[in-house]
Amino acid sequence: MTTPAPRRADTLFSDLWFPDETRRIRAEVRDFADTVLRPIAHRLNTTPESVDAFPHAAFKAMAAAGIYQIPYAADVGGRGLEFPTLATVTVLEELAYYSPSFASALFDGQAILVGKTLERAPAHLRDVYLPKLIRGEFIGSFATSEPEASTDLSVASMQTVAEKVEGGFSVTGVKRWITNSPVADHILVLCKAGESLTMLLADMRHPGVSVSAPDLKMGNHVQLTADVTLDKVFVPDDHVVGSVGSGLRTAVGALVLGRMGIGAIGVAMAQAAFDFSTHYISQRKVFGKPIAAFQHWQFRFAEHATQIEMARTLYQKAALLHDKEGRADLEAAMAKVVGSRLACDVARDAIQACGAYGFVKELRGPGTPFPLESIYRDAKIGEIYEGANEIQNWVIARQIFGRDITG
Image (cartoon, rainbow, N blue to C red; front, side, top):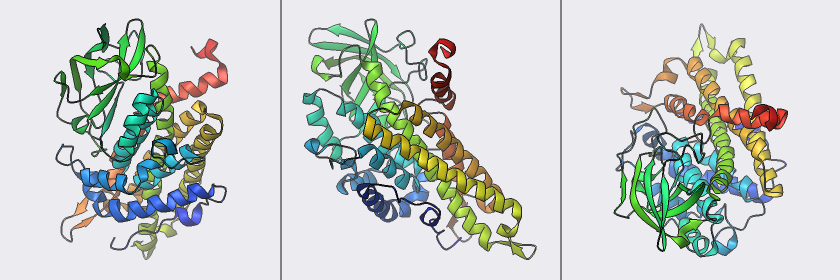
């Protein structure tokens, strides 16, 4: 394919009910993505994980463009939007259209998991670290998962321990799958402190912190994950985020927003796969007619267009509900399940419809890159991370049947 595929969402989807501020955010971030991410997207999406490959320049460009201002209040240097959650997930869709792993690592991980947790921190932390995050002055990590604790973030499962010492805590343990950790400056660590969980903000430069080489994954290559080992790392008392014993509530608050974000990233991947493949099969001829002339593919992509519309509306409703009422746990779970599953379904059909041109990463003869291979690899993690889809279905089931039945 030598010509770019048209953005079919522009004709199949309408932002008619959006607030004007959100429409402006979409246009602003799309311009950034077209200018900065599109030219480097193939390299970002196909280069294996390494510290050297981390896109520092694109990260700095995003901060310079003011995109990290979007989720936050004006008093810390943010935009002070009326509907910040809706704007935030809209940013994720626009970034992920070109590079889902860039969006996941450097907006979901950085702006939602780290930033929205710091937003709930005491003023002396919030007012120092959030302005720095907005300006792109540090990279953060959000560390809840461990070798034996990921979905189950209970006191019984958690093995990272914060022992009370004079002036603070001594933290020892191992965290696993920690996004951005190989390049991070600060880390939010969920620890067991006594009989409850506490969230602490630690310095990655502490001599007791060591980080493994980045994990080598099937996809999501920009999202560097690694093991973080903490050996008697001192964290002062004033670096407790929230309060002692409120760590799980603090973590879950950010993860709920992250689940909406994963829904938005899933929609972006589905839309990108849809756009490329429908453009391709409208041009590619077999047996004397375009592939799109076969009713099988007409019906399949009609179904996918409908599902993309529904998934996009669902994540947007979750975000708007959170902005208006401060809570959207059920809708966030639904948005994550639907968006992440849709990305896998559309990518799979897109590859099948495009045949070898869907399966190939790059045609070496003409030097032409193709996007569907990386979308298919990147899509699967959406069904797994930030709370596996089975857990999200359990959250939904609890609302249907009640905790007395579901547990």
